[in-house]
Amino acid sequence: MRYAILGGSFNPIHMGHLFLADAALSAFGYDRIILVPAYSSPFKPGAQGASARDRLDMLIASVPADARITIEDCEIRREGVSYTIDTIKDIRERYRPEGKPGLILGDDLARDFHKWRDADEIVSLTDIIIAHRLSAEDMPFPYPHKRLDNEIVELSSGNVRDRIGSGDAWSYLIPPGARFIIEDRALYGLSKQDTARPVIEVSRELIAGIENAVRSMISPSRFLHSRNVALLTQDLCKRYGGRFSMDPASGYLAGIAHDMCKSLPEAELVRLTRKDGKPITKLEKKKPTLLHARAAAVLLRERFNMHNKDILEAIRLHTMADTEMGPLAKALFIADKIEVSREHLSSALRDNRNFDDLDALFAAVLEETVAYLRSRSLTLSKGTLRLLDLIKGGSFEKNKG
Ligand SMILES: [Fe+2]
Ligand SMILES: [Fe+2]
Image 1 (tube, rainbow, N blue to C red):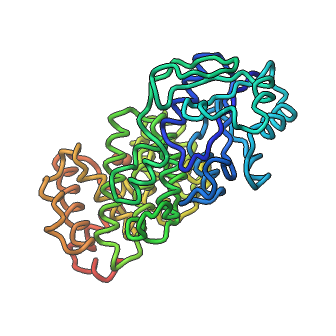
Image 2: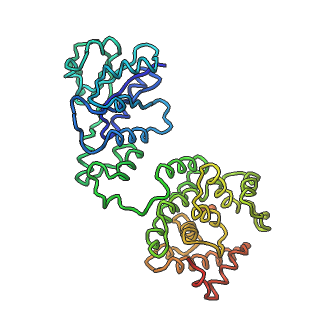
Image 3: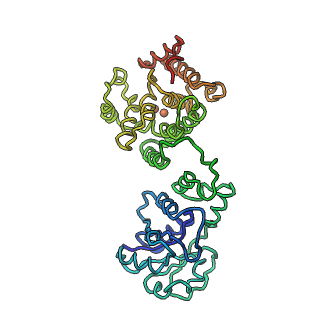
């Protein structure tokens, strides 16, 4: 396999680094780029804001599922000042590359390359690739090398750090995985206030993985519906979560996943649903597409190892309201019915300033939903009818929570 090495502080990794790796891959036909974060650079000792572990974690989180990029932590494991010659020898020994590995250097580093430890030996062991970082002109470089004719990305780690520290926009300058780590760990002077959230039971990496899977399972318009439902469920958890414990991240995940089985064939819906241990009702037999809710709860548990009871319950009950619904299930049910692409219910329900209470909003949504279903002579589930009786009889108050 042909490798090229791209070293750096990656403090933090940003889109410019990944663009450079990608450009080198396509220009010279390497099979894989090895990103090597320095423990401490001889030129930037004591880099501030993030530990070696943070920087390594950010790199790993930034390139999920990209088989063209690998991450090598030898410099961090060695500790101390990182010298490129040591890394090259180590990589040659362990990776056994086909031919000389490439060594990608920005023209900002090329100027002082002659000062690097064992510069001549580096030149003899690698194919040096000079990339544009500072100047579109070819800066002189008095050693054998190739030139990468890349566009300059006007972005540096220092610039990203400054932006974070001063509260300027920065989130989309770096890969999402790295961003989540910066936010979760409040790196680079990010104020704790910006990151304050309820305890996260569901990590954003998990959500991102499930979101990607769901996107490939349903149509783009169904996915947009799901994403709107996710945002709305999250908002409802924030707004009404004071009285109940409703985790906004769980709300988002429930929304993203609730319709993941919507495009599966009916036989598959039945096969999955049988695994939840409850009988399939007469109504569900008559209309198996209703099972997409129960099937999604099973799939989320089986494929994604999700065992959060509130999330699974919310997804399971989103087509058929039932008296056993907890607050998260109610929030998802509401969001699914009033999301902006839905036209069955009155849009006044979207303005939740009209409702101080989650249960009041839920009751209003349920009543309108039932009226809509009746107007089209559609069958109501037993659970929905029980719930409606409860709301109408005024005993709903006792049952909530
Ligand atoms: Fe649904
Ligand atoms: Fe839906």
